[in-house]
Amino acid sequence: MSSASSLVASRSAALATHLSASGWWYWSHGMPALRMFFVLPLSGCSSSLQPARAHLHSFLKLPIPISSEEQSKVGVIAASAGNHALALAWHGKQMGIPVTVLMPTLAPLAKVSRCRAFGANVVIHGANIGEAKLLAETDPEFAGLQYINGYDDPEIVAGAGTMGLEILEQLPEADFVIIPCGGAGLLAGSALAIKTLKPTCHVIGVEPKRCASFLAALEAGEPVAAPTTPTLADGLAVPTVGGNAFLVAREYADDIEQVGEHEIALAMLRLIESEKLVVEGGGAAGLAAILPGGPLHHKVRFVAQVSDQPGGIAGLTKLLADEGGSIKDIYHERAWLQTSISNVQAKVNLLGGTTERDHAGRIDPHSKAKPNPKPDSDPLTPT
Image 1 (cartoon, rainbow, N blue to C red):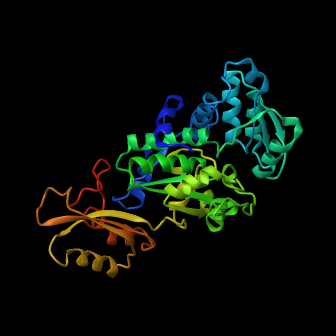
Image 2 (cartoon, rainbow, N blue to C red; image 1 turned 45 degrees about the vertical axis):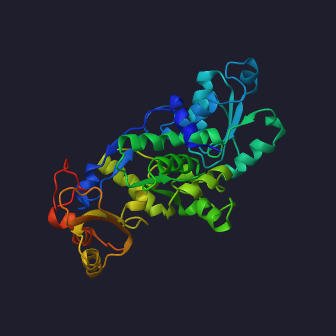
């Protein structure tokens, strides 16, 4: 299975990850201890960074050299609702490798048309990716074609994981990384990379409630077919997560959350209104989880100075309890506080304890001290 070293090696085949700070979130939510960044992979053949980089890496790792006549004649095949198929079709065209993609009936027509424009042989079959995949693997018509799994192939996972490396390169202070989850390949690769380099960073996967295949796998202890109905996050509608991806993601990801259609739609709208980004449902799933109504909306993190004398931490926890805050975890740190020998830093994660902007402001000592900090100030600097 993929290792951290293979993720680093795959950088030679990767596209650049770009992080963009959200000024809208910073100012509108009154939480200066919480900064949010978006990964903007809105360029390239599929307008989706994970398939583009992952498939280029996968093609470069094909067992038969790309330049060989044999591979050019045989070709590759895959099942996909859109992004995987687009990236495969694009790179196959560039490298002279015939590509066949089986797409379910729920695949957006725009993606089907683009795959055909890239020269792929497109076959429409099945109500979901699972049914399309079954035909691709069993129909004698496709015998001899090399199947490339868009979320479970080890090389695909390694290629996707380079995004995790680049996130930490650009934002080494990241505390949480929220990743959309369909077949779990992107979650697995990114979580492996992030946790290897920064074990304290929380990696959280988000999947649609209408296709909660990772949760189903967790409950069963292995990948199983999950009930699936049409969802705005059609790119995440994978009924059964990949076996390899599941083993890695279960080991390295901290949590998995589900979002409903209303939260996904709201996230898509907020991205258009406030960030001027047009993003499909699967890409908006991460934001959906932290907007009001989402499962991560009440998560708050802050760093405060407290007395190093007996009762210092107790005073902080009493303040949080008085304001109705619920502590998920708290970390006592002496090494990095150089301004006072009598104080220490307390790093606190709250979960499920804030109900609105004013509530978070009362709980967060920094919001209380600086209700309107300047955008270029460090929201984690103790006061």
